[in-house]
Image (cartoon, one colour):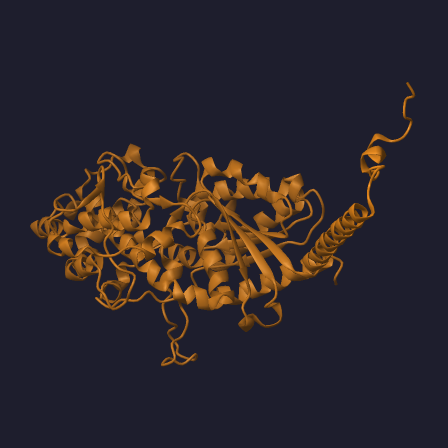
Length: 507
């Protein structure tokens, strides 16, 4: 038997030997159609590749320790370059601000109820020299007026549970567990996953009319699961939700508590600095607890001149909502952004706590620039997750690790020495940097001298540990400050786009 020496594939594709003329016509027509479809697919793939090359996609990564200002910086980008969507989401932040207020009051109540702390319990050197001598004697006993205030503010615990139910999706119950009585107040915080999930859950929340009369009882909350009350509240401005009503009813007592001299002295002695925490609204209680309160975004209203000496508040930027995990935000600059309106931005927001930092590395690939936020006001504070580590020291070590990472050798690093407003207030209050940073020596304890020193330290690390020489970009920031941060972000935007075009050989 003869063995065929032809290609098996060629044999399979060869027309049948007994093919009729009509069958041949059908076969040829099918082959021509298949060839046309194949060519169309190839042309589409080629056109898509060319369009992708022409489209400017800027990838930006936000890094820094927890509470360094990453999420606020992201909101600043959104406010500046997608203003329409940002303004439409303002009402969704009302529940976050409500929870921030409740949490601040809880911190005060827990602090004044806690037994006096022994000297050995202190995290850092004592600041007793900053407290009036008579404060110690007065703060040993709690006046009956404070006990009465505590009783009248009990409804806030019920409201806290309702707000958690509004903000946290039902499948994330692990985030809703309230702190146990023996835990410190610093841990009294919930978290959500980054992205739109919590906003979607909040937008769907509606008040239960049958629960209207249970305000203040704290006992009749309707349950949708074990220990989890149903969501309450609406997203509309015209409808007053239950948390806002209770905050409005308790506003006088909250103001009295916050402005009480004995309370302030206890907070100072126990080093509870609420003004330095994100989500601080106690100085705006009358405004933010009004029944028709709408969170502001820092943008001037039509009835307000741009030249007004006192700029509008920026509640959305000040609001605090802890996020865990990693999420990529994509948006295209709107027409109001001018010549960059066609640029797609992809900003990756990552969790900053020590346990989440191992998740950063996969996002180092194909990134155009990194904004690293170092909260330099925390020179006298320790990490919430590790009381043995100073916050400023942690930022310095983290900056060193980022600078020396070989995966980022060709990536531009932009340093935000953040929270300069809090730093300035702290230095003016007499807290000395030299007590916590021994190498600072006897230099002046003012903002200009301190920031110049710290900028030099971060610059030296950048210069010494970068695998390749690169330019040092550093800004002194207070990212909750809308006016100054807008200019800084515009500069960063231009720098990033310029470098992106240069790397793409389009400039």
